Length: 121
Image (tube, rainbow, N blue to C red; front, side):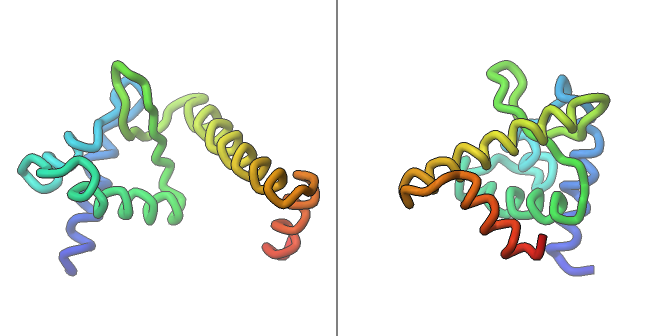
């Protein structure tokens, strides 16, 4: 098994133990559990794990995140947490598309229609 696959399996194993928003695991703690050491730099050293989380999400693994001040981090959702997270990321995407529409001096609906057509929808 490739090194990347081993790391990916470790990340997934750790995340599967962080079930529910109340059990979210911080990026630094996830790094410690996967690599067995402290990250030297919060952003640069954890980039590999963030990329793996993105890959897992693209594969359909429901990995959510929270920026809660008391317990921010990544978690596997339970109950309505998945829908809540999807609502948050959709709102974030719409805010960015709204900015694009303002920059282009066009309507948001036109931008969304263009995206839909480019995706084959």
